[in-house]
Image 1 (spheres, rainbow, N blue to C red):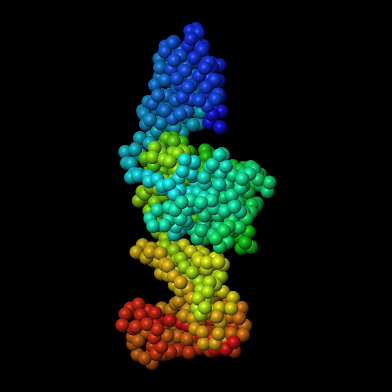
Image 2: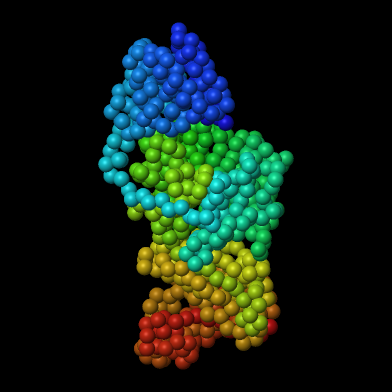
Length: 628
């Protein structure tokens, strides 16, 4: 509707400034064309204008209007030809005709002529909004001339009839395991969420997401899904509980269904326009679009991070490193937590909105955005890109020739230089060790290199499932805990790209009882030493919490080694390592009366010492429940 009103304004404006034809037949055709334009019947309008020109070949206003109609329909070659003929008739045309000609030339990659006409327009029109856009187009021309010399590989693939229909499908969102797709489908002006599963190398027939989220009276769209598929943030507009025209809402997955959405409230939402959320992989930072005061352009990317009291913090603008005096939209933060994809018409590009990417450095500063390249980007608007967790492909919506109807969702390979950092993930299910029943548990993953918690959430109460993302390049603590149960400890060492294969695990935890034993996978010592390394602290904090929550539990801390070296020295080393843990617990207010410690050396192996992996597993610290 906005584009239609703009075109109607252009037509009416043209009629005010250009001369009518003295040829009655030509003028009648022209008037008929204007009537067709008001009805949004552009085919009839162009036919009437062609007839008007045939009746009066010097009818300049008919040529100008025909150029406008073609440009609106994205028939840029025809638009260029129409404007050129109008100028041949009389070169003293209004400045906006020169601008429109330059824009049509830009769209068909006629950059040399486009630059010439843009410069001519800027020389006579120094204050309008078109002047600002013309100056931007000049920068774009220089950028595009060089960029098209180095095209990127681009072969978009339609996701198929399981997802796409004769209706419009757009705004895809993908879980980290690549198995669940949630997208927006528009039927009769109503936008709802639909979902599809990736099964046997294809997408299943999509179905409505949930009656708790989809409504008949309001539109739902512009969504993001957390990597584990448990939290859906989306945009809702003109709702009774809204703070502005459009607000951001969130729903939590509950078994096979979703919870009733609620408005995330201030300070994320305001009396202005908030939309297009993107949640970070740790679930702590929400990126979104807003036109609130304090930005750099019309629409900027902002963020809010959860504070220590579990509330959303102040909205912070991402700054001039990302935002421009123009518009930014559709942010997507990758599962690596460091690569941001977004659309903008403010950075050098190919005309309108292009897709860019930026990475945040170790100092927390966003690097200069990079255009993802031609022909992924074109003169038309490109937006709404999401990138798979492995970084190999992206999903976006477009109206391409092989589509099923209106907008369809496509996938394409991400250019090598635009790929995010490598990540892995651990996906699994938690069960009772004895009964094999599902246990709702807390899963925590900590980056031991940065000491940052990258995942802290509960498993699905119905399925027991969880999924936690882990960027490559670090060492990760993995703990599972549940009330009345021993906690589970694991360590994932992901220091090279070769370790990016996802982990699929089943976790069995046992009830607290005398004789139960847990190996602490994240207690570390240097070789032949017994001083606790700093990275051990997070695991020790878990053990301390366990002992504080279970005051009747007494434990024996046990040290073990592999079989390399002297038995006496191994036993002494294991004893001192167990004592180091014991001393740390006492130092942190655990009663010494509840603790004993012992070193077993190599006498109690849990793996074959003939292999390096076996030796590594035998070098361990554990604890045994001695009393309840």
